[in-house]
Amino acid sequence: MDFFKKKPTVEQQIRQNDRVLKKQQRDIARDRGALEREEKKLELEIKKAAKQGNRQAATILAKQLVQLRKQKTKSYSMGSKIQSIGNQQKLMNSNMKMASAMGTTTKTMTQMNKVMDPQQTMKVMQEFSKESTKMEMSEEMISDTLDDILDESGDEEEQDAIVNQVLDEIGIEISGKMVNAPSAHGGALGESSRKNAADDEIEKQLAALRDL
Image (tube, rainbow, N blue to C red; front, side, top):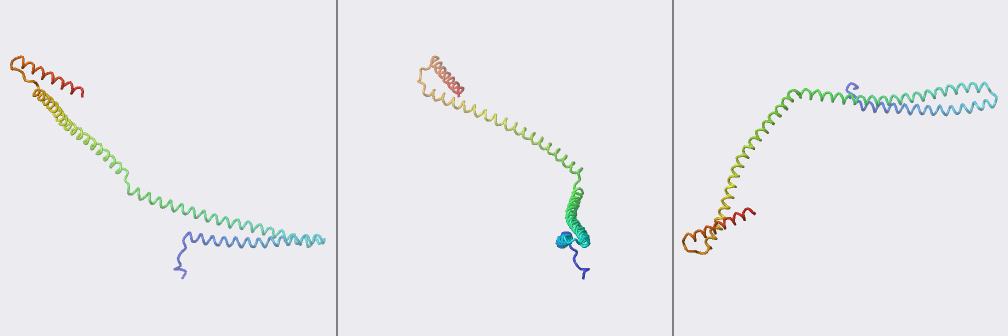
């Protein structure tokens, strides 16, 4: 049946070991408490024997006290070692976790290095830069050509429209003035007067347009 027993994980084993170490610490502390009580008892008996003048009994009790204190020192030392083992176990677990993390990171980097091709990546980037530059140049050339075509066509049409508008306005005003002008007898003098009046009116209209 033990063959099919599931092996505990590292975390489970550490918790189990920690429980065992803590139990040992409690047992040692309990034994040390008993030693301390026995130590006090021996001290009282030694004092009693000394008061009674029983040197032999006091010497025997003193030897027991020395052995007991040595045992208590060993108890403290063992407790420290057990605590050290517990701390060392935690450090080992921490190191194992870091080693596992490093192993996973190494595998990830290995996979990335297999997938990535630095030379191919650099080639793609260079091609992209070259084609992007060509596209920008082509776009700029096309845009400039269209601007030249549209601007010239637009300018000519706009200029023609302004000239026609000015001529229409002048023509309308001149026509209106000429219609309202007083009639005169035919002859060279009359024609000259009408021409002068028309010329003056044109000058006025041009001057008004320049002031706009």
